[in-house]
Length: 311
Image 1 (cartoon, rainbow, N blue to C red):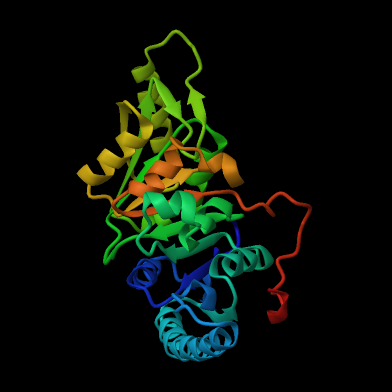
Image 2: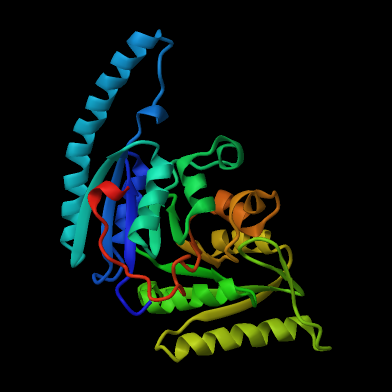
């Protein structure tokens, strides 16, 4: 991530979308931000009308939503433009989740930022809410904001020995987020550490005390942050990984929980019991799932600015 972070901020008129803007304004000014607002007529409640009347209703609803976009988008863009070097805004019609995911792929962004809009277990698993679909299917990292974050005080970084966790450390350091929070707490769980992106991961059998290995592992992560000028706290705990992270997030009044993923997509990540699913659903604060963008590693793929009609 040598070039400035490319961010897609998806907004609507919800309170959590404004919370997402508030949190994003604390990020490094060099980030390149695209503001996306989707006019999603299909997501609105509809009365029981006949075919002809429903079309007329939808047309009027679309006009109302477009007027709301004409007010909201310039307001958000102006706030961001006073902080970030590069900001642009785009308004699209269609299904919100589909448009967000398409924009992320076409623009090859590093991070999608959006509000949760009251994410709960039922819509997360069954109803295909926008935030859930984006979290599950995004080709890059996703920051899901659930409540106001006036000041990013405490980041809780859940770690294991997976490649996804290493990506999370790299993301925090290279994006500049590690230097913004007042505290960063690295936490791992022993003797068995589930992948914080789903699935299971066991400590290698070495004959050593699992807790001692866990402490040594956390100390190594602390040294990695220290080498980049960032001081972080470390803790090694025992128990169910999701339960440990959620309890610690509440105890430490965390503003952001960060986890890596193993790049799984679709139904495999919808399995009940996955750590990322539980933390995303029940965490009392914002959640950042770090996923190496699918286009990274491809042979020198150009990150050109797409034409507006491409998505």
